[in-house]
Length: 99
Image 1: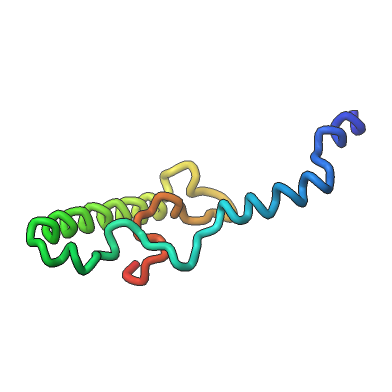
Image 2 (image 1 turned 30 degrees about the vertical axis):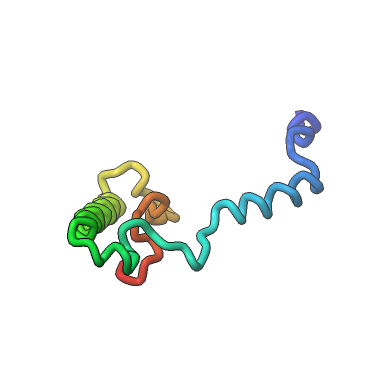
């Protein structure tokens, strides 16, 4: 049984190929821009576009607040036990200086 288990693990070569790719794909770029946080100057010239961007920005911030509230809710099953980290994957303002 031990040999069968060991045969299911990837080789060192496979591991050295996959781990850097996983690391790259799961990390955020320092230059990322987040939806609803940065407005183009050309957008601000048009009143309708500026208003739409403002509504979109408000909606993104309310989603971020909802995620924060859920992260703090001890009643959620994933908020219990050791090593609980906040969920930020789909948080619209994650990494934004205003956050």
